Amino acid sequence: MAGRKQQLLRRHRRNKRIALLLGLLALGGLGLLVAWWLVPLLLVLGWIGHEAWFADHLFYSPRDDYRYDFPADALSLPARIEGDRLRVEGKFAAADTLVLQVRVRATWLGRWLDPRVLIGDDRQDLERGVGGRRYLNLSGQGEALASGQLQLRGRFCRLDPSATLHVMHNADYSQRRLMVIAPHADDAELAAFGLYSRTAEASIVTLTQGEIEAESLRRLGLSDTEAARLKGRLRSWDSLVIPLWGGVAQSRCVQLGYYCLQLPEMAAQPDRDFASRESGDSDIRSVRRHNPLVLPGDDDGRPHWRNLLADLAALLEHFRPEVIVTPHPELDPHSDHVAATRALLEAIQLSSWKPETLLLYANHLHDNDRWPMGPAGGGVALPPAIEGLPADRLWSPSLSAGTQLDKAMALAMQHDLQGRLPLKRRLRRSIQRLLAARRWPASGEDEFFRKAVRRHELFWVRPL
Image (cartoon, rainbow, N blue to C red):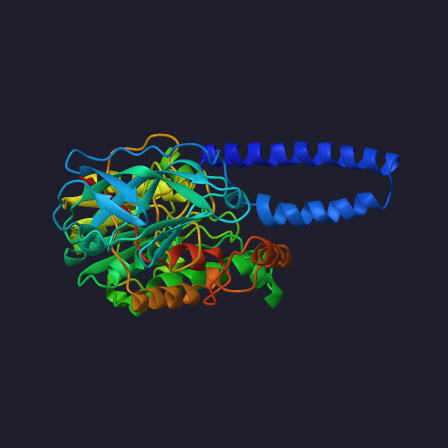
């Protein structure tokens, strides 16, 4: 992860350790003054309470305002919530992306149960204890809104009657030549399965093998090195084969074979080779044999930045994408994701083919590991932005129920998203299901089945 998220996580863990130490001292005193048996009882109750209500990684106050600026071509209209209906003051033409800026305040129950806003037949959840400006996604509900029939109701929270509707118009980017940049296998599916599955000319470029953190494969009797190599082969295969479920032929999928968590170091020292941290491999050609074309990096197989840029420039010239889907460099903190978009921008400068538009996505966040909050199938409210972001236009296409199911099945094929959760996480989910009324989908145990299979996909539009 990027440095800022590491700092936030360290601070979060430090504060938890301090709170735990103070709690233990208080319990020790209580045991000495009252009864010893209270100490283990309160420890168990305290652990259950922590798992139910305090285990989320939330690195900002839920009472902070989100900060979003929108471009000059976005229309902003005053709106009011009257009863359970949203009324907009002024007219707006049919638009693909609608965002409602509104102040939300949790009720007492909203400190213990996830506050949510019911928007017609949609549901969008917010942080427990929310108390600030938030941005709800009304995309796909324009007809009901224009007719004054869109219902808007808070559960475990109250909505300020005054609001602002931000209206944005976009081209239908699914009708353009599209390239998805995926730092790892599954990033393309998490961010854009709905988009690329309805695009006639889509290509998918995966930058890394995804070979690290192969502990689960060691049960097969493999050494650490062997497990990492097998995981790299499996995830490389995933990156080439699973897009066919969304209609993208293998002839339009490319695996570049660089190594996980090495992209930032490659960018810092462009001429130096960076081998895998876990498999010991240093030749990217080991997973390239199924690629549909020969690339510059195939000459020597060296894992360095200049080969990566040359590969990407060649792919731009081969597929000639008009629109490129790539990680948001300011919002998504994963170090490989930041480096992937940096590599793309540098490769565009080297290439004779110049795309027109970037569609930026965030599969990870600095501040909130649960976003999008709430159960699978709900809408995607805008993520926390406590620090200002560039004033990009938003595009939020809707996914039908059938497309959501196909997306869930594409994720279920990903080897990295399979398998059971650790016992601690399973216990946490059982506690949260019982005490905090949280629910997880039946399609898979990994958290991405909840976060990524949604009513919307969300992209930040940045012209080149």
